[in-house]
Structure formats: C-alpha cells, structure tokens
Image 1 (cartoon, rainbow, N blue to C red):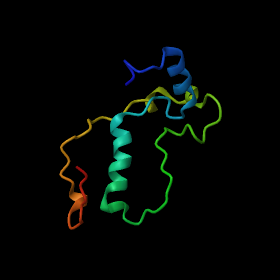
Image 2: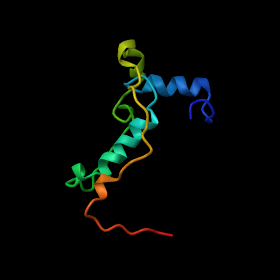
Image 3: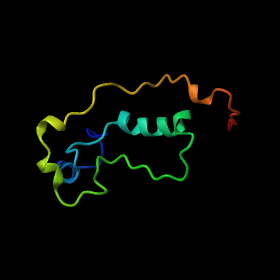
Image 4: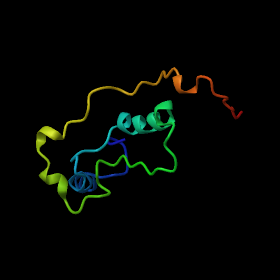
Amino acid sequence: HKETGPMDAQMEKMLINATPMARRGTPEEMANVYAFIASDEASYVTGALWLADGGITVAKGAIGEQTPESLRAEPQGELRLDHAREGLEHKQVQTIS
C-alpha cells in the first residue's frame, strides 16, 4: 500500500522512473491477471509466465522519465470483491477446511 508500505519517496521515484508505464500498478490491475488465468477464457494456458510489472522486466534504465504525462494515469474502476465465480460452473471444487 503506497501510503503505509516500507518504500520511502526516493525508492518509489526510482521504481516509477524504471517502469515504462511511469506509475505503480493498481490492485485491480494485478487481480485482473489472476482473474483471467483462473477463468475459462484461459483454459488453453499452460506453463506460462505472466508478468504484471508495467514493463519493468524488459526495460533498461530510467525509461519511465520519458513516458508522457497523458499515459501515466491509472485506469478507472475498483476491484470487485463479490465475484460470482462463473469460471467454476460445471467443475468439481475441493475445499480445504
């Protein structure tokens, strides 16, 4: 959480400058990756490595400083926590108590 996490302002600036998207990712953006992988739409995905890091893995240097302000805005929306679990239809689910 950016307000209470262990990262200070200088560390955050370094991270943002190293990220091509020039901003931190939102919880919704991270959750959407997992929601997709858990959905039926990803039924053919096997053994893939998914990176939700704003491009920092492939970036070299402080590329985020070159990103225009117009591209730095976070997406609109909030994380929906009341999922209907549609992807589990017709599937056997094992629960752990």
